[in-house]
Length: 453
Image 1 (cartoon, rainbow, N blue to C red):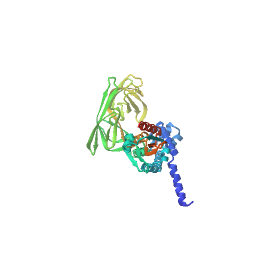
Image 2 (image 1 turned 30 degrees about the vertical axis):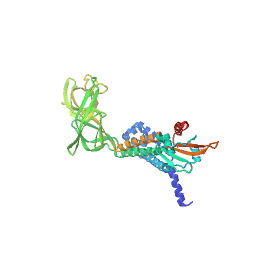
Image 3 (image 1 turned 30 degrees about the horizontal axis):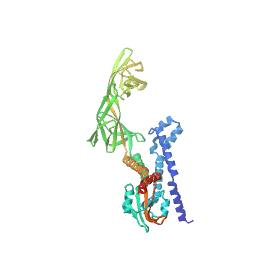
Image 4 (image 1 turned 90 degrees about the horizontal axis):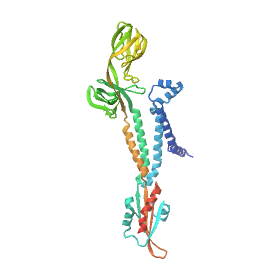
């Protein structure tokens, strides 16, 4: 065997491998299993989280295989690439034969043709139709469309065809999958999902995203002009709304009113109203030790000295409703520079015995809060590819499953019966490349008219 023949044989084997249906099934099953794994395993957490949650060895494996961000991992991208190659090679390999069938001229009429067709019937009439073309058109034209006369030495022949385009339905589905993959890869490489907490009157130009880069610049600033809440009579939130303004170079470009399930998109970045919270702007505390009581005003994350003592307080956390007991402050007590105690102080339950730090009994005298709006921020430049691909897939499935390529031949010729008298013989045959049983039943119903004639 020559080198050229060897190369051609090797190339053919490679193409057969990538066009294999078995390979497609293995890839699809693998993608399904890994997608389940990606749903079960928390995504986007730091590697230390997985090392603590699982064994150290498992943490290393999760880091190596990038299971913490599985849908962006190198091996998941390779699986998508292999499935893409499989679809392309499979489609190209089979397209040439499909194209030949679609563009081929009708087969010539012969006795052998009708013998090979799934549906074939033979009828005899004492008198031929007055106008065979008009008769055939009235018989089947409403169901099969355009009538094509066929050249023939003996008698008259006609050809009907319907649904030739349906043979391309499978290629439309394959193309739609490729378009969806393209959208997913573009979104994976150039899109992001993040979160933004913003207070009324505050402006932000970057968001927090999960992954190696915790903060991402938006290229513009978002200002929360106003945040409003509406409640049901039982105190449950009924609606919350963020009035936003978008600014560039210090100039306001656009405004938006954000509600739950009513997002807004600015420069390809979509903002969703996802949550809300409250943040203390000022806190007044009463500290009692023995018979002495003193008051201090503090702010979150600002350390404040307790008058006349070596102690100081730091508020590090605020929970709007802790275990249905109302607002609570997470506090730390220092003596000089050393931490001596920490705990929670319930604002609505001053008698609670746990409202103590060290030797001090704490009571919240006053607390002023302001709302914080929680916004989900997404950008997916591949979303239009996914929409187009999904639409193509729907059209492809409809074409592939609900239409078929149907062909009908009719041959009208003169013949003598057993007594030697002249008669007209009509041969009708047809085929369909899918659902032939339904096609045969349809043809049997249509050709009943011939028997009546």
